[in-house]
Image (cartoon, rainbow, N blue to C red):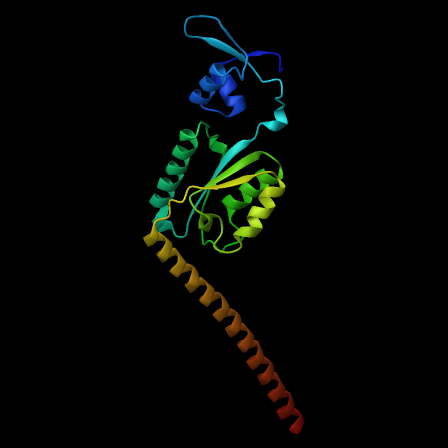
Length: 205
């Protein structure tokens, strides 16, 4: 397979690169090619290439609430433009997103991304900023990704208004979470006390 000649479109799909990047590889002699017509070339995969070496660039985007769906679309488009502007192309299957709190540790899109990373199919993860990946514990993700040779790239396109709104929403979620735990614990104590009083009252009789 690796001795075959490929069209421009096919070689870009295999190597996950843009037309500009392929042109630069051709001009610098980093890829073998042959001219078959005035405008058409065929290319060979680099000798160092192996199927396992070619990984995908993944995009991960997140917003907190459904009313921010338009913001999510804009976030994804900006990240795609960033990837293309840096000489690569995006496989649509490697665009992951969630509408969920940054503190939610069981997000569908994030779980799919992690699965691809653990299966060693990702080389880079592009995010607008680290809060999109997680509100807390970014270092844990970074350390995990590094073990699989995955680089996290932050584009830093935070909207301060959106950030403040989402942080407020997350803080409210934290308060609600611990309030419910406290209420549940208090309810259990009161229930147990009631049972104890009923027990002693019954025995006194």
